[in-house]
Length: 309
Image (tube, rainbow, N blue to C red; front, side):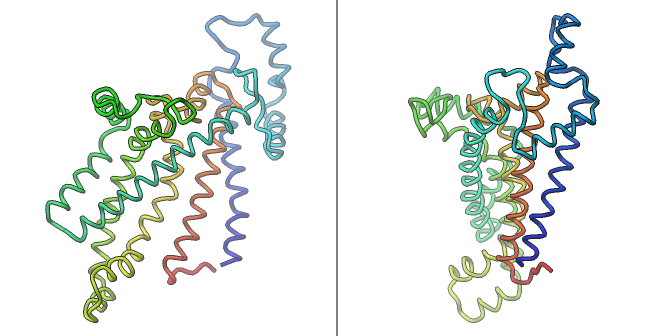
């Protein structure tokens, strides 16, 4: 197991290098640049700016310089936001996206697993149909529709929550509830359906029949034996889901005015701010790669039949 963990950690390095390389060249070959605007700059000024940021060097030289900076932990200057560098903007906004993402995925896990287990135990009853109906709604309705509906009902009509804002404002942590519920909707639906199908398959397995034949209580069978086996598909889904909920929070952050990383990702795309775009991609990639790594480790702990050699 230890050798596998070390090998996987070492394997993360070339994966991230490939991602950074592809991202660097894609944004550079795309049309437009960070200094292009509605009014064209005079040629002399444009050349001076390009020389300042080494845009006049060959692309390979620019790539080598950028990779050297990244390996030192420097994601470079922002070409549109002059006050600070890319590191500042990313690590100022990333904690907000992480807080929102962790709360949203926690809501998805708690209610998704609970709903899926109830639907499996009460198969073909109104509990099953109601739980799966909510799951389908969460999967099929876009976040940019769910968000404004929740704002209208719970903020504007009932007045229970503010329409927007963040925990650093006057309303505090209550501002997290609506965006977190909105962001959790699609993952809640997927987890609920995965839990139901996996639990039904597990409850029909031979070792569960043996446990029932021995006279074990239903609660012990369900939580001690069936749940552990049924969690494998959910665990494998949670790795990409957590990374996806961070990257997918762009729409929700815009709707609820959350000062997260999504704002900079969208604006940097419009501005052709090369370093900020690649910097955000690097952060998202690191989250995705490490979450998949953690999932593999947890997978082996849940199922002793799985070995890594």
